[in-house]
Image (cartoon, rainbow, N blue to C red):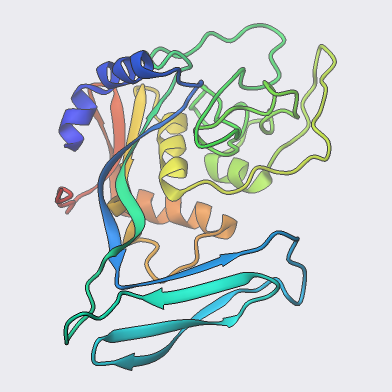
Amino acid sequence: MRDYLCENAEAIFKHAKSIRRLDHRESLYIVTGCIKTDSWALASHTSPMREPNNVLVLKNRMVDSSGSVYSWVRKGNAQTRAGTTSNTNAGLRAKEHSLFLRGFLLTPNSGDSSGSPPAASAGDTGPSSSGSNSDKDAPSTDRSGKGSGIGKPGEASSARHGGPSAGPTSSASFSDSLSSGPGITKSTRPVVQKFPFQQASIGTPSEFVNAYLLQTQDRAQFAITHDDDWRGTLKGRTWDEGEIVGLLDRLSLSRRVKIKNGTGWLRDESFVQTRL
């Protein structure tokens, strides 16, 4: 399926746009499966969670003949629930609950999803527009490692919505721009900023890998990543902002970039095609 998506990325985006409007840099998610389990747990809260009640802990409390049983041991001020699949027969419980979807994230390089980089106009202070799961900053179309840094990949730039520019304008590596966050840029016109300003929250690993590919590969008009490409790399680790640079470092050391029909992806030398 990866080969098919690479060969037909532009046609797929054109078809998607014929169904509904796509925002600038909005990615497509092609579902290929899911991770299922025999138990579930939910936590929700309506008021801010502050120390010391800002930690949620879910633990395996016991293991019986039918499987593990989990419960919330720290709830903060959240409402929590947990449960398991009903045991209608003796033996292991059926895995009926879908926890996470798995699939390909296909991200375009340009606003029109046609693969050609958008033209930069004089006086621009950052990316002109964007789109994805919700509004976030998109990487600059200059993928040489210079120009604006990277915010939340695949989403709208804050500049378009009246927010601060997407990142530092001085020369910086991809890793530096990830860790440095939004910077101050010189503007030739007034900019209305959001208030209160909040930095974009972390995106998914697939979003950051695709942004890395589009920023560093001049030939990549699209980028594609499957969740299975990084799941093994992050196994047993917490996915947070501190893991972004480490993830890309580990991927770049063990994999090499492949470009097919203008679509780039990170491929391991011993990569085994995802079973669908």
